[in-house]
Length: 334
Ligand code: ACO
Image 1 (cartoon, rainbow, N blue to C red):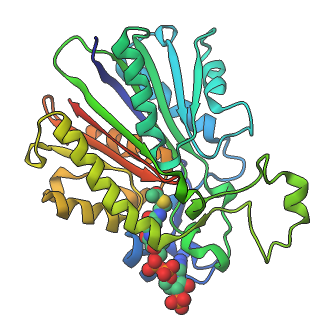
Image 2 (cartoon, rainbow, N blue to C red):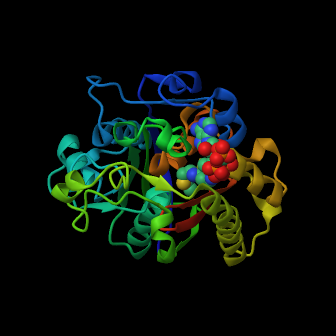
């Protein structure tokens, strides 16, 4: 068995900054409410005409990760793309990236696991590298939320949370002791409707959506049972981090850096307290970017690394929870 490691990281966020005050012009909300409940101060939104899409933002993050990994793009043997907001209904963004990078026929796989998408993607990449099937795997998380949110008071508890952006990691076979020690994944489909977007889908196809009275049901906007999500998130985050630590005979005191999915600052703070970590041991940036779902962990990880917060030998923990419900963790030695 081989071990995989992250060789290069990249991120991209659109230029347009949308503050809480900006949102309060579109719906009944306030900077105070948003900051108190979520910690978010501003987020980035794609601006019409700025040339960005989910795949294009993913490409920008991927190019940076490839450059930093210092490998030839033609040596990438698999692309894994995590998103809930693909450019096309089908095919997925993975093949778009392959074409945009100009890689001939390497496989491209899309992961549909929302906030846990990047952790699921890393786990997939890790398995392929471990078995020796592939040596270099590109994992991308990217989201274009802004185009699909209901920016009216009706959905204010959802729409103020989300932002656009992308992050990427180039995973490669490790040649030393550093790398991914374990990944643990979970899902619980009984909560499918508590955080979801029904249509368009084969169950809720376009003519049916058009025929619906939007006042009665809004299947084409995300819906969320915020309090249930919160309650489940704090439990599952803690459980899956503990599961990963125990698997590796490690303790919470061994964690040097925790990168939690940026769901809500209050959730991150809850986990930090439970693990008794110092502020310097947890990297949060939801204040600036909002919740970027599959992109949140790679953006935060890249930022922490760029700021010099992650050093060689550090024990780094990635953890996610989201729609499905799905959740997972990655334990790695930098
Ligand atoms: N601005 C102002 N008021 C608002 C807003 C808003 N944006 N949204 C809701 N309200 C109002 C409600 O209408 C309600 O008013 P009422 O008491 O007069 O009826 C009041 O605020 C409380 O509403 P709740 O929905 O109960 O608000 P809550 O305190 O639960 O906070 C929140 C909502 C922030 C979504 C919270 O439940 C939460 O953080 N849940 C976790 C969900 C999460 O993090 N999701 C991220 C995406 S999923 C993921 O990444 C895991």
